[in-house]
Figure 1 (cartoon, rainbow, N blue to C red):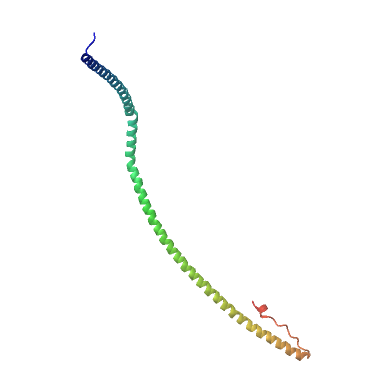
Figure 2: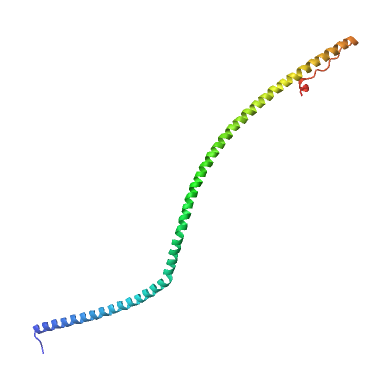
Length: 179
């Protein structure tokens, strides 16, 4: 039986509606399967998260609590050490200042004393020179006079005794007479 064109159009519309309903049904079934897969994955991840949470509660949290306890226990000691370091730093700085002052004073005194020693040594050497000159004059003048007297007596005796020519004694240099 042949259907009129109008009937074919209805048939086509009906076929199309059925096709759309079928595609929609397949899409809904597919979505349901995807959601079921997501649900299964989520349950597995949830179980793993529960296991990790349990393990963390059993192993990691006690370690964190111990670490926090040690930090809280050590905090006053660390504060004391920091305070002691600050005091020590201040003390060292103060002592360094005192040492610097003492060294500056010591260097000043040493320079003054070095100047005094230089003056003393210079005066001592000058006085020693003056003393040597005076000693040479005191010792050499009588020796020269005695030498001249001895030469005069020798010359007089020589001319008196034998008319011989008096031998002159070799003059003694002043360097040989120096004591």
